[in-house]
Amino acid sequence: MERQQGHNERSLAWFKLADLIARGEREKALSVFRLLAHSLSDKAYVLQIEGDILWFMDSAASIEKYKQAAFLYQKEKRWTDAIAIQEHVYTMRPDAFDPLATLLVLYALVDWPEKFDHRFMNMMQLYKEHAIDNSQVEKAIQALGEILETQDKKPWISIWFTNVEEHLPALVTAKWRLFFKS
Image (cartoon, rainbow, N blue to C red):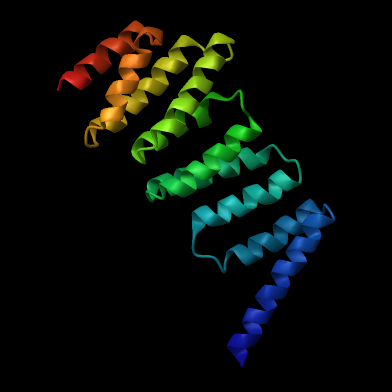
């Protein structure tokens, strides 16, 4: 009976949280959420929900919570969850470099060439618009190369590299040529 009562109280608390969010009572909602978060064992999920609450209330702090959740998902190799969070952050800030660079790595890890190519084109568009600079493109491609060195060779990456090689910074191109020769 006592276990059932605890479950009912938690369920009631989640409804109370939803009501506070709907009414826009940010501080009360976050306080109730912090209490409820203790009943959840998945720290990344807790950060994701906190990000969702802040996002609903139009808080810029939501992006930081989402980044923390994505980092934990990546650390736990929960690639799909990390991708979902990074895609959400990208839709919130389509001119931001960090989610795009991370998505390139994640799509390479899960072998999703279509999404990889699409996000690479998004990054190159930002480069053409001068929203990101040469060093950022170089940083993203180098991070991708470092991750791929620990993975089995992916034939589609070689094809992709051949197709975009002329658009990449010279230093990155030279390093990638060595990577594909080995």
